[in-house]
Length: 498
Image 1 (cartoon, rainbow, N blue to C red):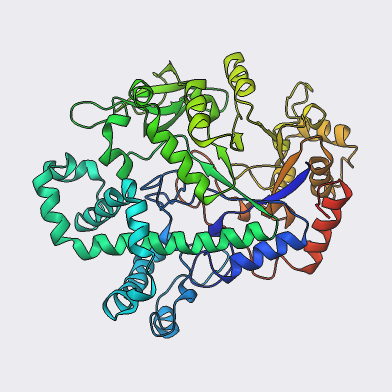
Image 2 (image 1 turned 45 degrees about the horizontal axis):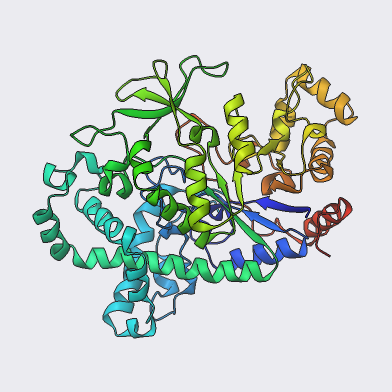
């Protein structure tokens, strides 16, 4: 069935207090999507972010970001508006200041936690303890990890004292008592996040909209996952990575990309029947309806760089788990809708894995206009089972990309789409229409492209540090005029349910 949706991170939602949340503005956004005839809301990973603010580098693959907890949802007696307004979250509501969030957000939430837990209000939340029990397989380690990290002034776990690094049982037992209140606080944060997310998801689904999530292939080294279960990764006897992830040198980078994440010990995962992966993917499907699987080619073969190298030049390829993993997931979880992020250099073996898995791949219009005419991303080559995009969170916005398009690519795009070579003002509209009219059953347009925004709305520029993941939509931007236009175009190309 043909459908259309929007890519919009939770953090980019409008509103007060520094960052998008799971409150009223999220509900309003979903309502607007419904009125605009959209069937999908694609988000980015929901985990708590670490240094660099990237949702692809999280302290946990299972936890939710406490910054997304809606402050205005608390009763005035629990979290007074006057108290909230006493904190500075930045003057520009279209940009996120993560430094200010770090300084103030958890202080406010801790105030609310203390009132609810020590003034008898916890009786109003009888599902808190059941939530903790049901999620104990990850929550216990995560809450302890975050509490120790606070005690260690934010240092990564591999810089903690040796007994804590290596999880000495007697030391951890002592800390369970000493840090008991902070541990409970971090469990409470996850309970609040998951409660608010579940309510929002129910509302979104009730509008006939499916949520598409995003699962990073790799885990941050400084995460509770690696600290608690180092056997899942290719580590040495000192719990240090032997190899880290990256991408080899190519036309875009003479030294490659060094991501630095520990790579997996796939032989160990296979011995366990891929139990951790099944739990990870299963947990993700409790939060979303469909899942984009990041860096799909890494499941066929992945690039390893010796830990400690300054560049990715001296890495090598290793065989990934292939269909063994996906077959195990299907046996346990049943058939699920998974989108393969198959962008970049493709090999025959990756194409075969994509075919065998049955997952739809991605087609991105911004990659299409190679003057040779040989690009797989040209819309006439898109297939029914692919997912089409104008661009992704890693691309420049459509408007900025059009302005910066090299002369030869611009000439080819103009010829291909029958565009005015000199006046590019209508190019964005034509490209959105091209994606919508394509053969792909599912198409996703980033919200910034519908808004015709420039580079100020770019979400991420790969291989750069700082200034990313900061864009927020203006509150009035998604108004009646845009809703009407989106609905008309979505209907025109057969993608609305009504």
